[in-house]
Image (cartoon, rainbow, N blue to C red; front, top):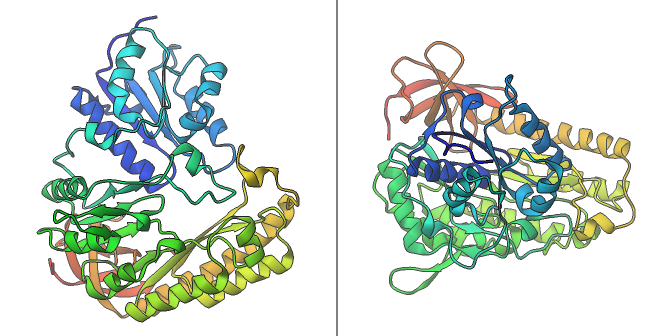
Length: 445
C-alpha cells in the first residue's frame, strides 16, 4: 500500500549518548529532505524509534512503543525502527509486526531518505548492512542551531568482545573518524552555538588518526587540537576503556584547561576471576593504578564507573571484591546494573546463573555505597566557586540548570542568567543528584 511522502517527523532515541547523537543526525537527514519536526510527536507523519539493545527486554519495549503509535481512528504514522535492536533483530521485527515500514541499523541510517521513499511506495524497507563506506560522509552538515552542550561521535564499534556485550555485533568493529571530519564538525557545532562538546565512542579513547601533518595522533592529540578552537569552552569524552587509557590522555587532563575534570572509566567488577570471565583486559589492581595516575595528573577529577552485578558464577566473595574496588576508587557517580543475558553473547551460555533475588540484594547494597560516595563528593564541593554552563530552564521561575566541571547538575535562580552562559557560581548546598548555587559573577567565560 502506497502512502504520502512524510512532511513531518519525530525521532525518539533510547539508551546511550551515541544514540542521542545518531537521533540528532537522523533528524537532520529528514529535515534536509524538507520535512519539519512535528509540533506534537503523536501527529508526526513518520516516527523513528532509535533503539538500544543493551538491556533485557529491549525488543519488547519497542513493540510496546509501536502499539502506542496507533491513533484513535485506527491510522498510524510511518514507523521506522532504527538503532541496535534493528541491527540485532531486523528480520524478526518484520515477522512479528506489519506496522513497521522501515528497519535500519546504526551503520546504515545515512540511507534513511531512500528507505523512506521505498516505504512510501509500499515496500518493506530493511537495511542492516555495515557498509565499508563511512556513513558520516553521507550525512548533511550540522544544524546551525545547537544546544549549549553538544555530542560529537569520533569513534564507533568495539573490538574488545566482552562476553556479556552485544556492541561488537550491532555496531561492528572499531573505526575512527578522520581528523579533518571531526574538526570540521566541531567548528560547525561551535558556530551553531555549542559551548561544550562531548566526544563520543564505544571506546572513545581508542580513537586514532592522522593530523594534517600526517602524524598519527591519539585522542589526546585530538583534544589538544580542539583546545585551540575559538568559541569552544569545554571538552569532555565518553566512554573510555581501561585498556586504551594511555599516558598522553592522562597528561591532557593536566595540561588542557578546557578538558573538564571528569572521567567515566568502567571497570564492571572488582573480582579478577569475574573480570577474566567477562574477557576484560584488566584486573582490579591495574584499574586502580590507572586511577592513581589520573589523580596524580588532575587531583580534583571526578571519577565515574559502570558495574554489573550477578554475572554468571559471581559468588558472595566476588561481589565483596566489587564493593572493595568501589571503596578504593571513590567515585563521584557510578552506574550499576543487574546482569542481563543478551542472546548470542558467550556469557548467555555460561553456567552459574545468579538468582534474581540475590542480584536484587547485591545491587541494593552496591547502590547504597555508590549513593553515599556521590553524596560525599557533592558535599565536598559545597563552598567552592566554579563555573557552570547553563543548558536548560528549571521548574521554578527564573531557575536555570547547568553543569559544573564535575558534571554535577547545578540549579541557580537568577534573572540575569541565560541559557548558553558560562557563569561563575558559588555552590551553596548539595543533594544526592544535584547542587544549588548562586551567581557570583556574570558571564565569566
